[in-house]
Length: 466
Image 1 (tube, rainbow, N blue to C red):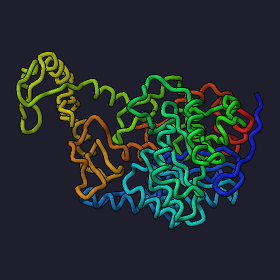
Image 2 (cartoon, rainbow, N blue to C red):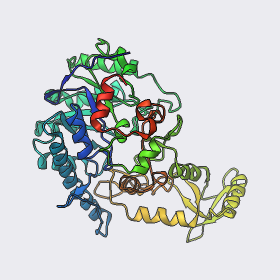
Image 3 (spheres, helix red, strand yellow):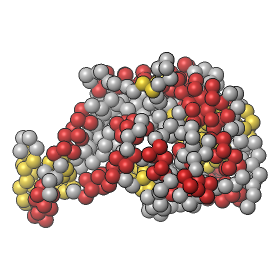
Image 4 (cartoon, helix red, strand yellow):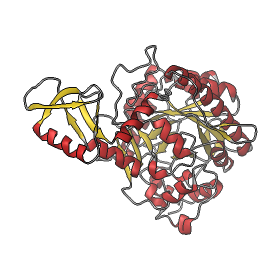
């Protein structure tokens, strides 16, 4: 089925209604977003700890010198601002005046507001819009409006947008460029699944987006476009959404497909892995230190986390009920009580080499090898505050510098693994975010024989409906 894709006024210019989804850390950069914009769409660079560039055009990896978390946090914010400005300048140059350039930011990242202010101030006139998700970004509207930049909140329900509009966005409606509906079951990276939604039972996006449009129309936003994100591959599969009064003005965001372009900065090893994925290889999981669900390729990294979760038992401080068996752990040989069944499990795990028992905030113990225990502890100690609050390290961007809860060894340092995979490390050993449609790389004839297109070739292909 052929389609006719009509240009649309977005962020102050008529462009193709095709948006490159922003992928942090350092995965959507100035080169990739500029190339997408040059092809006539909206390119999006990640302002989530973006790469700084030296005078020779080389990436400058951050080496933290601060002795405390708060000191390292200040270093992180400084490099995030300078990196975001650098990538905005590159994107502007590569785009050559075509398309539009957006910055993507994670509202739950550490220092999000400071970073957004810093990037928009340092790259005035180079950034036309800001997409923002992961949390409820109430402050997004006034910040964007103060720089005369359009804002695009990322939500996963009409209810979430209603709350944002009534509390904040109604005060700056002229700068609301669009509303991004990111499907919580299909999108890559962090997802907006609510507690009432079943992660194993994907919802149909159509009624959810129709409900969002209805809500937006209540507020007079009939002409404000919705951006469909998550699970978008062939546009022909969405042809009934075009010129549809129930959906209204619609544009489409591609996060996963731009990973496999010539301009994409990810490693060749990562690109080759994408070409080999099969349906079911992407898992929706709850290991992220943000507390959100996230979608990533099931690899050695996720496998270890699932295994770690399987080696977990509950304990109490005093004998109670069937928790009668004493168990000792830690350098202080702390005594707790577990069930007889769990005591036998623990003995088995210890015999298999998982001899370190680590306590969690939920009065449970997980069992890991001494090497993994040391890695977890070092990563927790090296925390640089990349999130506003972190389950793994118990950091929080508040005066106390802590969530007030114990650090959770069932999670991981997300900054460490995303920086490693973004800069050439083996993708099988690190967190490999991907949308659930990534398996289609292997099935799509466009990528036959390992073909990797330029961003321009990909945009042209998408415009055909494929």
